[in-house]
Length: 162
Image (cartoon, rainbow, N blue to C red):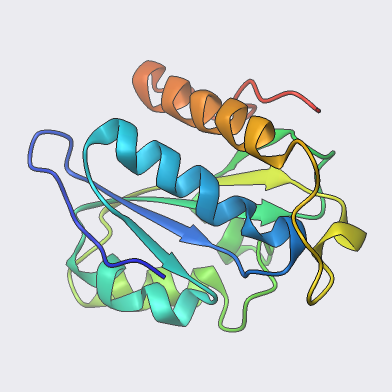
């Protein structure tokens, strides 16, 4: 798991949720690629609670997670309000909604963009290796997230199934 950084000219703290289990690593890989493109480091965690310090210190936060509820490779932005209505993106312990609420209470995470990248649930088994082609999926997803940031678009982020 990496440490967090924020680049002054973009202002984004990039966070990835995931685990080393199979395709669940996708959130980490996409966050790492997006952060590299923005010239900052990614904060990588296996649960939203572990993101809390970085989110509390962030002015603008971008969170990426693998999402079993989406077609593999699809990229979708989830509005933070949807988390408050009970939508769950992650299966990593403390919900992202609670972590964001705590970060906001501490004065951070005033602007948040959340992206899910579709994975097949069976590809995230403990001990499983990442699927073939996952690097290509991560690269496409990172481009889609960056395009959504650049164009301010929300919703479907232009990701495609592998």
